[in-house]
Length: 383
Image (tube, rainbow, N blue to C red):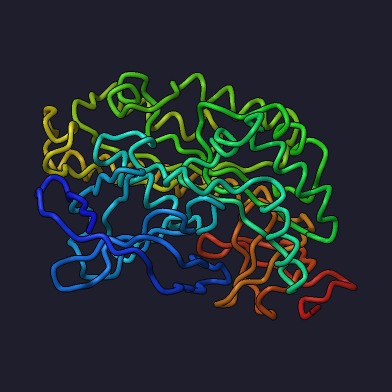
């Protein structure tokens, strides 16, 4: 029986050879779809993590305390968290899970390499295209490519094709797919093929969520990020130059250890300088055993106050973005809960058949969402 050690507690759990198919549909996205993985189980037999040739790592609620540990394994690393699912291999998952994973890593003072999915099951171009085509055949109108380190896709494949090449192939070989969307990408890299796809295809949605974490170079270095402030601003400018209607979101952390007043000012100013529309603002919380926890900590009232100020900056940025959209006509994807989503990720108050595409005229802003009316000839109930 193979075993894995859970750090920092040092407890050992057994690895079994298989796990049943786990398939959870939430807000229209399938979070995990395959079996045949090894699983880490606790003393009581409950599953802690699925590993190996799987699409997702699953962490059942109450198995471990949230963010308690990182389980380092021979073929990769798994992050312990509450009800957390992170897409591997085929990069399936949800934006919310991706953002949570990024936050947990930065919170612990770690870089993305600490949460790489096992490399034993690369999803090559033909496989991804086939999966997308199958989804379109089932009536899916928007496919989201997502992963812990999405821009590293292809590094283990012959010829190391960039992510942009995959995007171009999907758009070309699945012409009936109305909308293709990317989730979180590393601010350190974007390839020329991906830029060309943004420039030439309206079917590639004009929204990118950037894994920024901070806006100060020293803080970024101490967070072990692969980019500096200038890199993030350059990426934003490159994409906007070819796709002016693009919107950007980002995860940002306030109160990281040693964050000075000047560093925090650089963080706040990044929101406006980068023109961010969707800011996920988090207060730093120390985790025992991590490098960041050993750094000089800021007083908790300071951390909370800075996080609140960052959230307020994000709210103002979102309000500016939404008000700039009023008067436009967009084709929105109808979601559950009386909401639709514009191509640039803007939420719209709208009741319709979930999964349908509706042509809407954006008429106003109401509580951080756009309001809209159906355009003449637009059919929000189209099947």
